[in-house]
Length: 484
Image (cartoon, one colour):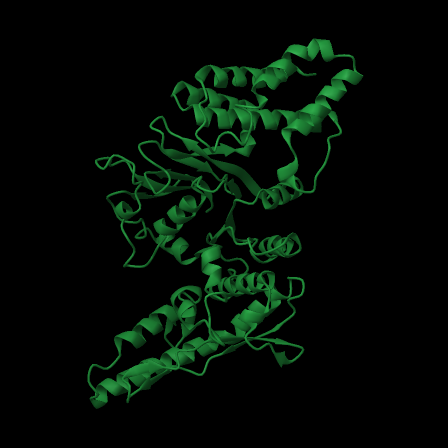
């Protein structure tokens, strides 16, 4: 079972009544998204559909604030390779009663930059206490065996501890509290060795992060005098060459702290959701990553890909990023690995003047981009039409240069690879082959719109684009097909 498409309607940045379909193709998804394009809303939509918390908010709390309040078409839908689907309707329950979807929910994890802050940056004291995030998030669904031989999870054991807190200090109440605490301590202690091993091996993949990892867990106790649970501590310690790094969360740089955070999250997943035994059915495992490499330079980002390819090769990964360099880096690798389905989200504008996501699938090519540009222009959305025309323009220039071996000025920063460089190289090729006069009209039309409609700096701001300008730019881009 793998996801082939995600459909969203009237959820956060995705307004109704239109349904936005994100193609996944049963593979990993690499999605580049501008700030404000709906990338984090896509991340949240999938996680909320699979949210097992009985206190989770209903769909109506997430609906797009600009949608018609009477609209009842809202939904989030996951479509799977076997033809089945999981639907969360706006006025209905999450589809978690389906045994397969419930199993998927347990095997789903989402990590964004804010979540990573919980492992290091938010701790202002001398210690990094991961107890709450461990029992409520990281290890919540980890299965353990109690001293009585019963199989349960860390989350259930901790809930039992909270439910057993004595209201009065009768002997029976105290015995129940002590017994629940003992079971919890026994369960958590069982998995700390595996967690430590997984985190340390993952951390070693990052340059300059060959630290020894320790988790100090003294064991929870019920303090009868204060009538509270005490020693709720799971302190992370890092050692270098046998010496403890005091206050490491204040000492290490952001790249190393980000590496530590990723190692903790990834290590927790490997501990909580191990691979299926050989020959057993391997249910879908889903990992969503939203801008988790912000604090890492390229030397530290490549290990993240290595970890995903080697340690999470039996997971379906949805990797979302606003970083063009990171997107381009993975896209270049994709030519060899064929592991990723690529897509892009832009911030467009509806006919009513509201921000809407504009989605393009990289596999659809420039012809599809032009078709979308025409469709948006027909609906009156000039800005979205201009955005697609610009993407088609850049796509056609790059495709032409790649297919015909045209040498183009290069920058290691893909953000600086301007369309002007590609266009200049194409013009120089035309001059060398004596075709300038033949292509003069094509070049003139492109130049007429390159400073306005086809300028990527134009569209984020409210610029007075005319329908005629956008229509002319689309025709100019179409004419690029005449270059031979």
